[in-house]
Length: 302
Image (cartoon, rainbow, N blue to C red; front, side, top):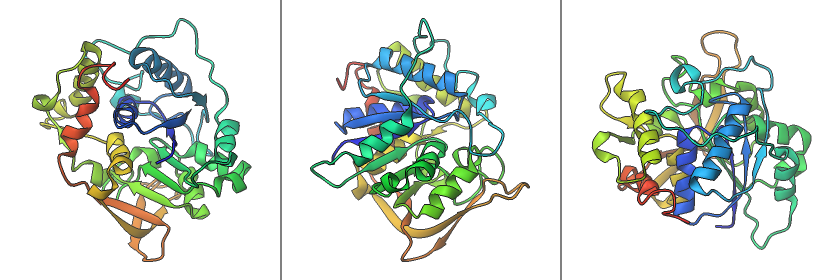
């Protein structure tokens, strides 16, 4: 696989997905940031802190600071003001606000630059606002995307509202824009990710910061009386790393834009000719293989 692009709102499981890609030597040509789990300045601070703590060397670019139309809504009530739960430790805080180049021109240039292989794969781990802006501003460049893998939506109940998954609800209009463009889209949805969970006994031997962040993420489930926490963004990364472990079923996908309790709700219908595929399965020890990204600490995959 040639180098991929990652679009992210840089919560903890986004960082986890990036570490998993690095562990398996999946080259990342660039990372574009989007407001989502936290406001964009905090997303940028998280990206800067992750670069310092984990030696992430891929170039980072700053993208959309708000959804296309709706009022911004973060996940702070679940993830806290930093967009990452912890048990005390946090990513290094930059001495001054980081300044990343704009994402739009960088992503467009990456798509347009001739390469040895025709692959242009994007792994999207947050709201799809940046991709929607690309479709509106540079449709010819966007048409070069050969595969967009997105962690989002739900073929069942939601998590941020009773009927909508967070990445979908955070910018339903952006998702609708992507669906209308009929890009080759693989959806790793909420119901799939919830099949893969880890508990306290699964936390690997790792460095203090990684352990603290893993346990803080696990606390989201423990505080709600559950014994294990679902893994989200790393499962989308796993679908890139180990496609043979998953099933990819063509489905027509829709998102509700109605201003009622269905806002952001996604639905899927079996459609053999659809360019959207719903990802399911996830065979083998995926949880253990995902957690292996933390074994040995930050220097493990350098």
